[in-house]
Length: 343
Ligand code: SAH
Image (cartoon, rainbow, N blue to C red):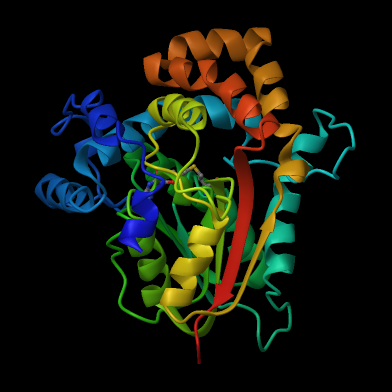
């Protein structure tokens, strides 16, 4: 599978990470490792350990990006940091965006056939790449389940926990800084394994899905909703140079490693003997999202908050039209991959 993913790795990948070489260990990204705030030395050790498997530079970049930008996102868009799911072709309204984000969660659950039956519904959930915990709290409430969220961003973990406490969910959900590629959980813990728009950040997709499968309990559902590139045609060995060029620019802005396709994910899931593997292309359903984010950035509140937020966030905002271009060119695909761990 490494060689499979290698075919979609732009040659400049390693070079790109050298752009983000500035180390901030000892700074914000290396401080709290768990929001229950153990002593500083333990927090530092855990945060360092969390960075060892996600390529160090990429992991630091991701942590810094979300440390810096999550507050702005939350103030305008709320606690779900992912696309909304819209009726294909229907116009999107500003007030409808929040509902569309919730719908994304519901559509993902429906697609994966997660049961509402009190006897079958998930009781232990992991939210891999949890942001500020929008999905974690929603799923914990919906199913009356326990949910554990992991993120690389200490700021996100702390904010996610504060929101959980404010909602009276502190006994049900918890958050920590940890690497999805080396999760701090024993094998077979969770009956719903959830990754909403974090897979695109993972530098090793095989290891990523392998970890999702490892922490899944027998019979558990695994849901990955993620940015992919288009499937390659049988005659292609890689994307076209102009396509790689566009993806490279997006990678630089959003701290992403090489992309893969939805069929690459399916092949990984098959290689891990996962069952009931299903995938769908929801690109049409998310089409109104990026234009709406751009419009929100162009309001007075959006614009002034953006200027105050910092360079990484501004660079992310400047890259938003590139996402639209990628979707329009049918290069970027918004994909869901769902499967089940064998009993
Ligand atoms: N799932 C959330 C947030 C999506 S933003 C939501 O839908 O609201 C992407 C998230 O992935 C961020 O929280 C980021 O910290 C996390 N992430 C990226 N790479 C990660 C890694 N290697 N380990 C853990 N979390 C990671």
